[in-house]
Image 1 (cartoon, rainbow, N blue to C red):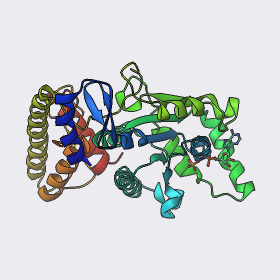
Image 2: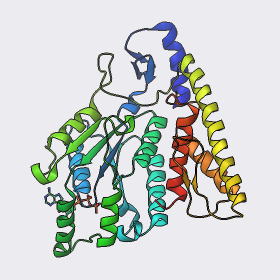
Image 3: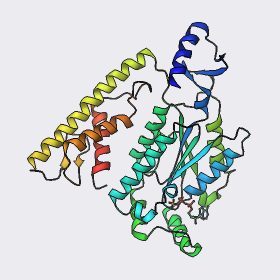
Image 4: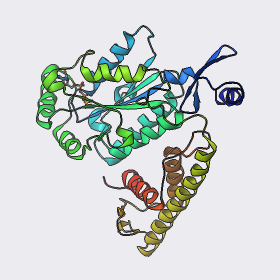
Length: 344
Ligand SMILES: Nc1ncnc2c1ncn2[C@@H]1O[C@H](COP(=O)(O)OP(=O)(O)OP(=O)(O)O)[C@@H](O)[C@H]1O
């Protein structure tokens, strides 16, 4: 697909400055100097997030139903724990299980994004850094991304969870439920990975396919990208401009160097601790400390570094990464390591 677009790009650059072109029977849409194949316009990633038992699966079904009611009937796929037959109490029993679950869902999202569909991730998606990772996958695929937040008070979620027992539905046990509530990181539309953000209030307003946030999300997901539409963001252009490629190279360099520094500091701290665990390692003032739950070998650290760089979308075909200085690259990598290898 990218080769096809690459060759069309050259032709269009020479022959046309118009917004929409028909070339060899293929419609090519130009947006902000980039070319997007129409197929990509039907692809999107929707991240549902909210406290445990806050109506996320109900929201995912309502959104899928609303999309299916459209004349264009876009393909919709829901990625959730139940598609992997995972029990919610086991999946969130401890950090290792939770990390595994996140990894399984993220891989499934990554695989699914290459298909022509709107992918809805129906899970807690409660950790800011994890939503960022999902956003990176959408950006690398060059598709649009949005977040739907089920905003329900903890007390109400707790009640709905208890009611599940009476309905014969599997419920969270108290320990898992309280731990998840405590660690929930509310989405913030000022973060580019949490934006656009559509907020549902299921406890106050109920929830169905006509709920305002669902209607707004459908409208966003199906809105055509045109030169006048500034509010639809198709992430990660397929073709990057020369200047973007220059900044990408800079950013890649920063990312590479900064993550190597972090890895080297951890290896050194571990050797000083004679193989003990690294806790409270400070790289510089103002950066989060490294807190690992176990000693980690160099091969594993290298593997995590590679995954992190891939997740942050620094591939050469997938367009410019966000502007990055050494400190923010270190901060992001330390957060990532603490999430993958730490206690929380
Ligand atoms: N607006 C609502 N009013 C009353 N009960 C609701 C409402 N929305 C959902 N529920 C009930 O809450 C329970 C959880 O709903 P749902 O599965 O949609 O939540 P969830 O956030 O996906 O849960 P989980 O965190 O387990 O994935 C269900 O029993 C459902 O019937």
